[in-house]
Length: 458
Image (cartoon, helix red, strand yellow):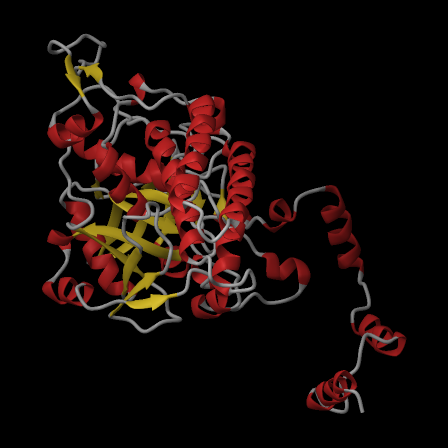
């Protein structure tokens, strides 16, 4: 008997003798169990003419939205990432700008240049990919890590770790001295071209002669990537003049000349790499353990994404302490779930899809993660909480989808929604109890770069 035939027979028996395909008889029985009713015809007509979310909207939840928060961090000026996946960068820089505006009592909205830092993010990721290709050159193309690298040579997504490493290395500049371009606001096509070039370069590095100078080859490749980025985003600012303005736009002092690193050091000075802890709520993994994801970093010489997995209650306590001390936080979640975009409300009662189809959608958070139904998809800035009877009932985030989106550029979420779809929060260590800071110092458990929880960066 041929081996392939034996395997096929074994597989059939392992499924059970009653296992069968979708035969006409099975299909007939299925159809009989779902005989259409008059109500089904109405629902079909409605779905044929419009979006299912409109039909599933829970009218009882459409009353006046509660927007009161008894603890909130002041902010001014909503940013807009437009057609790009840079929410992680907008969020990180929004946390920093809120700090600068508060500390220096700036009267006009302040925004840092996202395109400035994004230029270096893309260049650094290109170097990370090419060097990783060199490092894994002895492995076959079928190796899981090599396969992952070529699937993900570059992206416009990221995490707080990227913000920390990039600002430490390159500083920041005001948006006024390096404005956005079409390519930075609409990253999909532009990034795809750089990815194509990097994959081609990666193959060249893998197939180069044994005595080839791979580092020299890589440098030439990076020069081409730099040229592409400069054409799309503009040359990064090396130095600039800046001075704060009053509410009418009048300069409050003589402009001074800064390098991006000098500007960061004088007006911010945060040690984002060491003074902050990324917290995660992932019920699929053991709590009070620290985890690290291999190759999930923005710079080759930077830090892998590392986080401490905690129960929600502990995360909420630190979030509340930070907000009460007027400090915003980097926050990420599965924003697409139960989102009323028009009102900017994240509420488990926004939609009732089950009643339309006559089925249940009853998975819990752990089950949704394990089955790839849910994961962190978007980063925003956590800035407000409403507390009743010593418990949080509502939260608010500053978003980066423009001032006209959601609730005045913000999203409001119920605490029940927070429980189900919140994933990550970055807090300053001063808001963390000793138990948390000590746990964060423990040797992390290394997770592979292809882990499903991290397959889609925000």
